[in-house]
Length: 195
Image (tube, rainbow, N blue to C red; front, side, top):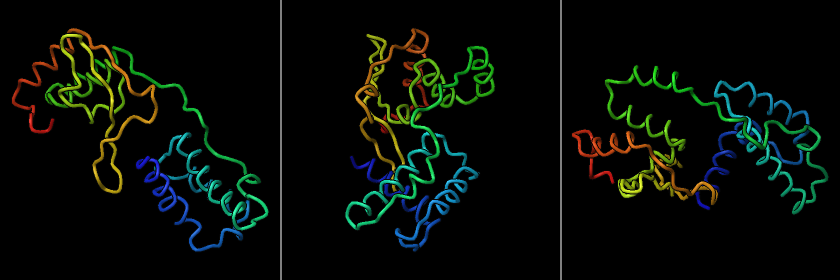
C-alpha cells in the first residue's frame, strides 16, 4: 500500500538516516544501535511504544536485507535488543463526567463540540472522523459507516482505506447525536462543498 511505503520511507529519512548518517551498514555495531534507541526513547516527541517498535523493526529489516544480499554476517539489532512493544497499551477513555467537563469548556465552539461528541460516543479514531463525509451517515439506521481514514503523507492530505478489515465497520449513533449531526449539517458552520 502507498501509505505503508510512505510511512517506511519517512521512518528511514527522519528517524534512521539522521542518526547514522553515511555510516556504512557493515560498520554499525550493537553499541551504536543502543545509542540510537536511547536517543529515540529520550526524544521530546514522546513516541508511543508501538511506534518505537515499528522504527526499530525498520532498521532491523534494512540490516537483514544487507545480510541476505550483501553477505553481512550478523544483525547488530539482534544483539542490541528491541525497544517498544508490538501491542498497544489498553486505551484510556474519559469517564462521562470527565467528557462533560471538557465539553463544557468548548461549548462556544460548535465545530469542535460536534467533533468531540462524535469521537466520544462512537469510539472512532481522529483520522476516521476527518475522513467522514455526509454520505457515510445513515440517519434512518442511526449508523456511521467507517470506510476510510485521513492521513498527512509527504505534506499532502490523503484519504486512505483502513489498515485492516476490522477497521472497516458501521457504528451506531445515539438518538441525541443523530439529531445533533442533522442540526449541524443544516447550520451555517457546515460547508457542503467539503463533502
